[in-house]
Image 1 (cartoon, rainbow, N blue to C red):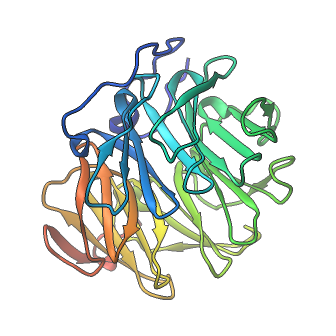
Image 2 (tube, rainbow, N blue to C red):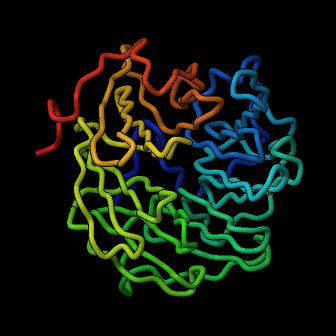
Length: 325
């Protein structure tokens, strides 16, 4: 059996066939728990990670642990449609549901086959999508009660699907292993393969407010494409480190994070990046913009936010110095 080629420090060992039955571990300080994904719930933030840990914050500074999570396995992704209702997924086909902003979670179901789920996206309270290892993909039209398989790529493809996200025009994108990307214009009913022009795995992506789409992944690669995903341009990220997450800031710039403490910020036109590396070289899995600061999440938990232009605790370098060739 082929090993799941996801970020190894982040996902650890795949527990084939195992499903955690115990509740989440209780922590004295949830800020220091390993966290791998974050989503906005209204004005607040909800982050998820290992041991069933869910961390909540109203301001990005004070964090508390969710009061009730029925699993203690690795949670890999989270999606909220408003300040109250959200879903989280993880290993063993676990699908969790919350109706109170992430304070309490129920096990909505364990999906058939117990797939390793890597990403979840709900576009409203009824329509959602899941993707994961070995080409797993499914969609729901009833708020997660039932799921329909999605055919992604050619019959028999089993490339790992790392993230599903929505673009500004409402179209959906999936990024995956070996440079594979896909686009749907009908809420996931059908998918078209994209010619990204790269062979390295793509871990993450985001839709920019001007309609363009940005993808990122192995070896520090960043791709900027049009809204249809037909034409892609390789941008210089300034690093060869794997990029794990991207987000667009309020001023239009794009921020990204990755392995070995990589933090990079683009210019306003999203044409060039200036990269920096944290002195602690801590692997980073997710980020969020909050009150003019970047909040970073990773193996050491929530890392104190810094202003996007700050150089504290990092060694800055211009993109041209260390770009992938």
